[in-house]
Length: 235
Image (cartoon, rainbow, N blue to C red):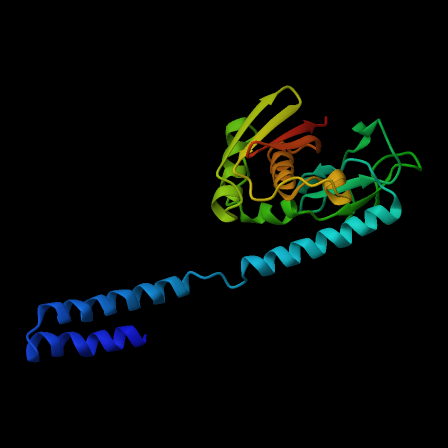
């Protein structure tokens, strides 16, 4: 604002009184720079990226500590919103279970839930970064590779600026997601081993919502600036 006011005062004086074109140009330049500064200040997010990273890391460490305390190493199963009372979440079975095809119907909105008929079919339901970011989508993703790719691209490259590009391919019950220029990489920590990285979590949540079926992160690796995520679609 100081540059704008100074430029508005100085430019007419330089042009009409001093009769100097260079000084007039300086006054006009001050106005332009002032408006640019105001515009840049208005585009600053309400919460800084550092604060967002701190909040994300705190939540991940708390969830990871809970999983480690319970000794859970199972891969999380991402559920669409129709199976989890309006918001997609992830289930982590309390007992290592090979037959995970039992997950069906609506799961009650609690932390510890039952997903099957057997007494041991128990799991904890947690909210993931992907669960929260689903709300950013303007419409339901199409149940195709192009629809899923468009939704993941919108979230990662547009809304969150976490990657440069995304490509998705589907074969039978496998979804291959390749993210170029991912800002958040996979780390060998307890949280990531169960729930995947935030990028993989977003891809899994969008995929399960688009297909309206449970999805599990089968594999995730990062190399040469690209994140490769393999998702398994459960019947």
